[in-house]
Image (cartoon, rainbow, N blue to C red):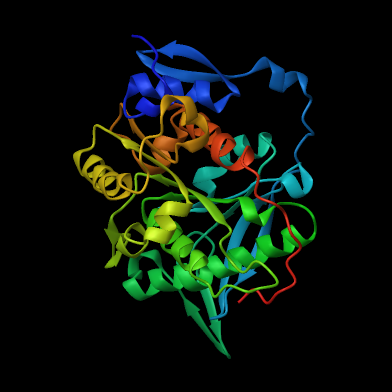
Length: 326
């Protein structure tokens, strides 16, 4: 099987070209697919040992007590922040290996339990304590995840930015199934904040990575984000799913078809710099956390290479944020 340029990245052949364009990977053959091994040059650089992950409490404006795990980065205000958002009835612990792999690259990774999931099941209103459950998640709860849970996540990253620990202007979101709906719609919200003349207000999300994305869940759809021209034109997007699951593949291709007109294929000469939409159809029926955690599929390396290409290499300037966050 001959290798092709990254501009043909719609199949296992083009998949190999993606690694070559990322510039930090070596190709190795595995069952007809091109996978990656770490470039020996990276090991020689002796990257700083990352700190131990810590559990952090986050509180939303409507009184939900969220738990998140924070994997601090190692590159100061050049650190790329990544948020991983789990699937319905999932939890942050399922993405520990992915978070550690990205932290090893120097990135700062925050993985919250969204409301009603994992350890984020308590809401306090005055003297009233309410127990939340993933089984009772509604469209309204999903909208609150987008507007309230994600704003609490941003507040935490906002503070880390101002402590010189990361560059909020390089923010990437990984959304898995339900998490893809939350990630895309919050990115839409982030890009439609009221602009300020003195300071940057929002527009921090620069890349979306949607794994086994749901088109809609509990009545909340991806449509508001996917149909928004501003969001489509400004963000780099990676779509990934197991191709042997018909439902997942149909959802992936529906999203791809709506995005494609805003992300035209660049010429061969400018492909690495200009390509902004990547679609990975892996040879498996596995989805969501199982897909990410299946070592043979190398999903973590695909995500890492995309982050390097679309968040690490581009110049998105760091700035101190002195404006109200909400």
